[in-house]
Length: 219
Image 1 (spheres, helix red, strand yellow):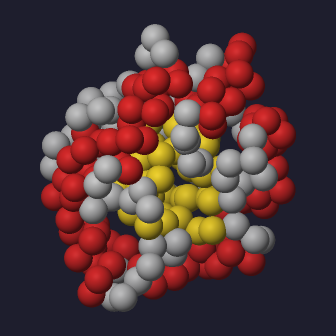
Image 2 (cartoon, helix red, strand yellow; image 1 turned 180 degrees about the vertical axis):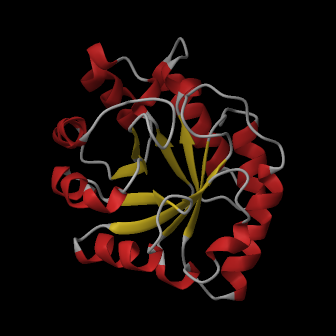
């Protein structure tokens, strides 16, 4: 099953409840929450209190992407707020195995994120223990960026690595996902698709969500 995860980073926060309900009714599978601290990436978004609010709005799983320094200090706060999936950056976490276990012990699914310049094979020694591998298809920090073309090759590499180690993680893509790039990333083997601007900045949020969902459901 292919999973569509609209990112509320691009949503209108003055009308967040209605916009989440629109994507939910149009076929979204997860809600993606981008957490930025202004240190690991050059932007600041929101914290656990917004995740908690989103959790009250929807019953969809919450996919929380921590683009923050020392994420291990805040994991419990986000899981307590309602996170079902928590992903941390390979580039930031020194004791990655420990943090993955921390996430799981607190009751959430554990994911690892790799930036565009981080080789996919870097996660080979954690591959068997994670539930999600998030491949950034733009440089993290801002919504609305253009998809990096060599991301397709990286998805293929992730599929090969998963097969080699008989791992079970889902492959997620985030950045520049629209009605063109969602098709090529799906064909390459991605399982989860984060879409922000292509949904929430469109004239018709419901129609945009349905279109993207249909494009991956037909594969």
